[in-house]
Amino acid sequence: MNREKALEILNEYTKNPALVRHGLCAEAGMRHYAKLGGADVEQWGMAGLLHDFDYERWPEPPDHTREGAKILREAGFDEEIVGAVLSHVPWNQDEYPRDRPIRKTLFAVDELCGFVYAAALMRPERLGGMKPKSIVKKMKQKAFAAAVSREDIHEGAELLGIPLAEHIGNCIEALQAVAKELDLIPPEA
Image (cartoon, rainbow, N blue to C red):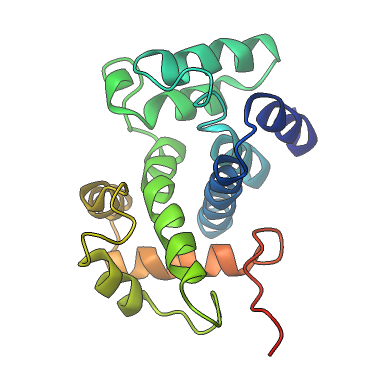
């Protein structure tokens, strides 16, 4: 499997542009961490890209991820990718615990990359010059991106064994690398 096939599946099952962007954000975070850790960048990227591809059709637990896993297996995706997708939600933890680097990282980037994206949209310079401390400050504003679990963001950094500020910095850097694809290039003055 390759990114082209993963994008095809994402776009077949996901019509909401915000959910597609969320997949692209998670993919960027996964690719960044794979490079940092010397892991398979393509495999990790596909896990991020596809982690929520089934959400529109099956938003309720436990169907979300489990129905998608069936589709990914039928399409021939690597079991490491399927296991990572299954592991990012709480209802699959008994069978698919976050006990491997790919699984820990997917959980860690899922909420945070979406939060960083939302924060970037509020800034005229978008991701340009964004610092971890500005994200930490935004996290304290309960009304901002209220659906994003701050607890999951903290837990993600703990799973990775790095300080929260470092994790935030990594996710900012990851999104900066794909800012154009995410439509996060600042408008011309």
